[in-house]
Amino acid sequence: MSLEHCKKTALFDNHVKHGGRVVDFAGWALPVQYESMIKEHKAVREDAGLFDCSHMGQFFINGKDAYAFTQHMISNNLDKVGVGRGLYSGLLYENGTFVDDIIVYVIAQEEVFIVVNAANIEKDYAWFTEQLAKTDFDCTIDNRSDEYSLLALQGPKAPEVLEKFFPNIYADMPTFGQAAVEYNGVSGIVCRSGYTGEAGVEIIIKNEAAPALYDDLLASGVTACGLGSRDSLRLEKGFSLYGHEITDQTNALEAGLGWVCDLTKESFIGKDALVAIKAAGTTRKLVGFKASTRPIPRDGDVFVDDEGNEIGFVCSGSMSPLLNCGIGLGYMPKEFKIGDTVKIQTKRKLMEVELCKRTFV
Image (spheres, helix red, strand yellow):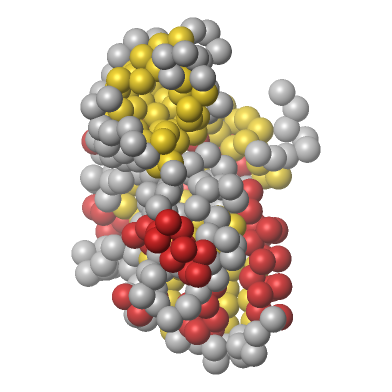
């Protein structure tokens, strides 16, 4: 497969050198796996693994009203965390559907740092700048995604690995905490966050230092991981993925993300719509399911009733290495409940699955 048209992260040569199977991932040349997706998955659950997430975007909002403008833009409430910490939030349209799901860090009242999904960098930046132009907030927003790499160090042994490279940071850092660091004289940010449900951090560092840091982390015994295990890890924890469980066609309440929408906050874009949706009630909900037989239902397969009528759809599906069965997430009418057996029409056959909690592991 030709990767000439793909964007490459600063770690592309590292992936080739270490034997990563590099593929076209939404226009980025990234490793889907190294030796084995299952081995990498289990390494993160039991030890420590390292992911290249440098395709993610980084925005910086600076100025007197940086904090206030961010509060206006996001569905969650920065007042819950204050300076030095961050939170997961929806970035919503006026109708309550998703522009994106993002992580926001408050470095200072005058400086906010935001991590956005790779596929949405241009769209998100346009949304922020358009909304800023409509207001009187005194701040600027800069898209500095091309300057930074993001290395996700994840797993129960990730904290002790981090201690070797950036001492005395992790133990005193709360969840979604952040701290400024340097590596080989190059500045970066360590954030206590991740997409695996395990302990660990995301190290966001200028591109020039990233290749050496990546190699040094692997040399310390960390397992190199690809996007395949990143997806199975997030799915075992029931974490949503933009473009699958959350889109510009799904609102935050039906997506099970009401907890990142603070309807007591004075205002934010999309609040009025969510208040109305909550009052009227949603018609569908995001559910988890387990498949005891093959095949594994995948994105695009549909839930059907006994007459074969489509009643819902699958957003994500994968084999769970820990449960040794197929698992997935999808949208169903809200009257369905945990424990129900329902039918899915896959490309290969009609099969039955059991609805369950969205957190599988």
